[in-house]
Amino acid sequence: MLRNSPPGTADIGALERKATQLRRHMLTMARGQGQGYIGQGLGIADTLAALYFHELRYDPHNLAWPDRDRFLLSTGHYSIALWAALAEAGILPVEELVTYGADNSRLEMSTLDTTPGVEMIGGSLGHGLGQGVGQALGLRVDKSDARVFVELSDGEMQEGSTWEAAMSASHFKLDGLVALIDCNGIQADGPVVLDMEPVSDKWRAFGWQTSEIDGNDMTAIVGALAAARNRNGKPKAIVLRTLPGKGVPRIETSEKSHFFRIDVALWDGIIAEFEKTVGAAQ
Amino acid sequence: MSSLATEAGRTLAMGQDEAVGGGRQSVEAPFGKSLARLGQSRPDIVGLTADLGKYTDILPFRDAFPDRFFNVGMAEQNLVAVAAGMARTGKMPFATTYGVFATRRAYDFVAIALAHSNLNVKIVAGLPGLTTGYGGTHQAIEDLALMRMIPGLTIIDPCDATEIEAATEAIAEHRGPVYMRLLRGSVPVVFEPGYRFEIGKARRLREGSDIGIISTGFMTERALDSADALRKQGISTGVLHVPTIKPFDAKAVAEFANSVGRIVTAENHVVVGGLASLVVEALFDAGIAKTVTRIGLPDHYIECGAVPTLQAKYGLTTEAVIATIVALS
View 1 (spheres, rainbow over the protein chains, first blue to last red):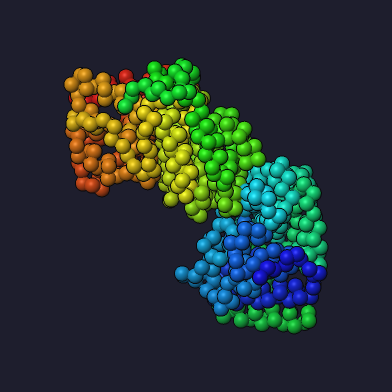
View 2: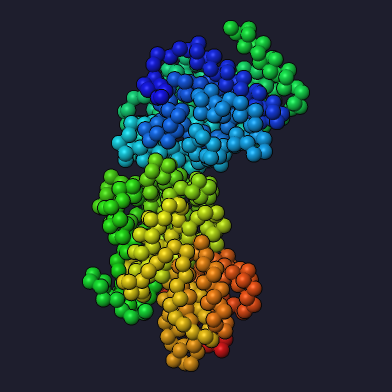
């Protein structure tokens, strides 16, 4: 059964509830090992909800369908968010989520492509966009109208290969390629260590149709994705300004940490705080 | 085996700068012509290059299939990444660049984007070992060593035009990532047209009992000529050609080693990490205690100069191989 083919009218409230559900899954997952890349996952949750439940054309029961839209998670360590989305989409069993990061689990802390629904091995940063270019080129050779969405991060823009790929995408006029650039302001050593601004101007200069939005505003995300559907000869870049830890005040306001590790017992308090925030918002 | 081939269309080798042999017939651009032929029956084949199409003999494919050819510019990481992405949509990319760039520059992409997922991409790499006088920036003297560390990668070092044609067909039939060294331009014909190439198989080309030369790439041409000359001097010399570096035919190497007095390896590559190391490992594993003399490049960067001068200086010519073996006897 095809999903989002074509995308219908967006139900923003429903998509926001999906994002909340993804966050709920992620908190449960991180609790299992007491650690994980929860900040990044919570930050990108809204984008993944908009993709899997509104924009991305796919069949959860036929993952190899050649004309599916692809979603490539270049930042493999955001896997916690991808597993949550794939479970909610019916591709992975929800019960399996608690195995995140455990020995013998296929829900790795950094994605391998052996897990269903994963389109590339993420984690060696700077790999995703070029592979997205290749997939988009291959789809063009096949005369398929399928699109390719690649998530990458602000820190990842420091990898030269990202710009090699950016150049080639506009050269080949890959207008079905959409880069989702998660600018959450953190990388391994802390706050982004090289000033990447002005981000949007860089992508425009490389020939991309570029928009910049609040990456935690569902209306803005859905609007930017809709604006990226036109096949005008230009690849599309959506610069997402996201808040790491979004939805959990204690993580939002913590030291901006690349990797989050706290005592398992404290996770119950964090989850309670999250549910309280969700309750207040509804 | 080293007699001249007479197939129509093969011309006598001209003494061009990068010719790797003299006095034999040759074929122009055997890789590119083979690929263009294969493209007719294999619509999944696409060609990729990183601004070295002209210099990696892939233009016959581009001319035959312009819609299936993509030049990504001087960007070897992206070359491999794009190839990986295309493979995931069911294409079989042949991606060309120089060996130095495919290895040193794009290594993480070859390892993670290609090999880790066993993607069906063929990297065809020009200027292997000492086939250019441009110095260390262009001479891929350690590519075999670097690439053999990558799990699941098939590695081929062909000897001549006949083998390049056969290997191009064989790697297209093989499903998985491949790194093949390219001999470009006017490539000598050493093997007869009927020569059979099989991935993972070594071929015993000469029988001999005193010395056994184990060689790969164009050094097999030197090995054959050396064996013929040495026989006349009363030194019985066998030759085992090992065109596949990985998977390595350790069984054939061990059997060959048992049939000769002492072993000489010959490779267009540094003598650490490549064929010599593989042979020594194979002999050790098989419990064969024999002295191995390693012919190949030293463990340092090579200077600029004319290729024939450099090959003579570093012992890669037939004369040098003969001298090395005579000195052993």
